[in-house]
Figure 1: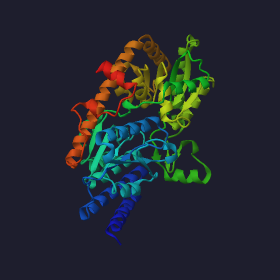
Figure 2: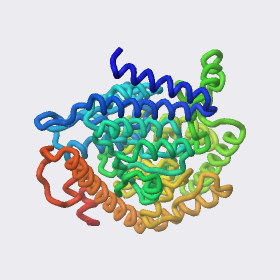
Figure 3: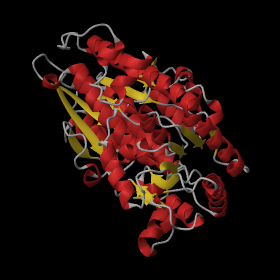
Figure 4: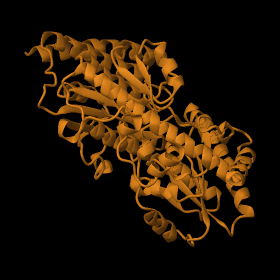
Length: 495
């Protein structure tokens, strides 16, 4: 038996033994991942993995939450790829992207190879990272228990495996927030030799306390250029828009059915007779569910509906409402909101539309109300006034960054309809000032994104001083991918 197989077997036996003692299935996933990282470290010590050598392409694996028709996640990775190609040069780079469903990312990430990552991802990462020169973790909510410990475990796994083999291990534009104790320990143990470029200071503070190296950054969706506005207009006309009315978009979610957790017993029941079908996410993973979740969701959707009805009451002749689902998971919430509104509000959901159409649609709006962070970010380069209804700190931080903290409301606000209507009316009444704050924020974040490219270049130079980076001026904007007709004028105006 080879040394590698003995190490894997030893790690698996230890992980299984500990997992039997663990009540929480999330903990079992973490133990298994931790065991394989240690196996990779031992493998590397006895048989060092090949390093990058001059003359060959730098092989980087992008690990993130793609393949679910989450528009924001897909846009983030698309723009990372464009920036990486710009920073490193096409001739010296070989990119691979993990996707949970290649059919749902078909046609995306055209310059990168797509690799199907299974829901139980441990062995895939162990085998795949060993063939790469480094890992770029792509998920925005990188280290948080709010959504799914399993997703953060995947991020730690990819980064930890790369670090264990002394490879490039960078989290790019990620966030850290509230973590369960076991996830916090996992991050502390396996990310000490990585670099996490964070999209806000709060995340840096969280990781600094765990001894994880950080650098300041931002999101990577700012440079995205969508389909032409004419395509969005065709979609709207098919839905009944007259070509004249201003468009107001609501982007609802289910804020209350998180986190997703592995539930083997529920998975068995679901497999046998379809039980827990409404809560089933995929594989062995299930959303939080129950009467409390249902009541909270209904209150939130009725608050959104009440504000939209009141907004439209005196504006029906001049505004056209639509509902937008930024991820296919949002379809249920959007359909329920449509029912509450009377069933005649058009729906645009990402399982029907590609990311280029989704963002084009957002930028054709005159007002957006969103619980999706990336609906706001992706619309901002189009200077679309927007209001956030948030379940966590991401939208709060974004609105504070815009200098408009009053435009971040809470999903569990018992007076959401009243407060949201006020925010919408104030946003419309002060649209030019809101747009000015948005424009300045976009350009500030473009500069931060450029600095991320500089930081990444410096990090890779330390690992591989002979890498032939293209020559460019010491200017963060020179580290951005080519800017399109939407963002380039903003830079000229606000820089």
